[in-house]
Image (cartoon, rainbow, N blue to C red; front, side):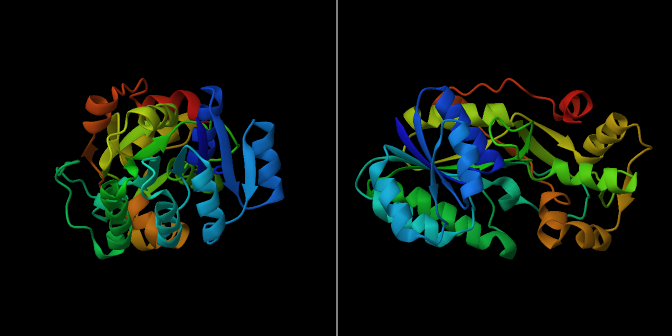
Length: 297
């Protein structure tokens, strides 16, 4: 299959692109620079230099491909619209990458017992309303001849399969710990996130390319863990003392509003039945704490 993928120089997109090549697919990847293009070429991925604002380029590549994966920004409505317009009526697969911070509660590190399911999503917070609107636009495109899906990843751990890039959440905790010698989490760190290993994420995308039912929303998760359990594992891996609570305002100063409140300070507890039941997805890695202790550093 000839697959066009945006975000091909990133952690998620680069890993997916590499997994596609290994599975025998022909992959064209959108990158922003000649340096990134050289990285992709070395991995057997055909690079196209451009940005998500290049609507004509996106449309051209979408029409030329058998399937499209958006693994770049989850919040760039213009790019999504350009891709959907190009794919309308083609019945081609369009997999869009979202993230489970859409159900994040910005709790400041406090725990929650609330678990969300794919067929019972909450009204989004003001901060996440625009992203959810994009997700809904993609799901609705199934009625216009697009084999669309929203793949909503949770906290992703593991090392990149392709280009040398880090994931979003855990590396920030690790960097801060190495910089200061103290591992910190937002507030008391009792907030819980569902999580999944990058290799299992790639497997799901590969399955969805051929088995997706148009208009399906997938949560991608294999387990869950509290941040205090993850920061404790980081402290053990680095031979540092017990992790410390960090007031939200100080965490915001280090990581920014979005990351401190949603990426590291919220609860995002979800369950994904669709991938297992519709695609036959069976994740192999189920302990983020074990990975942190044994493989992260």
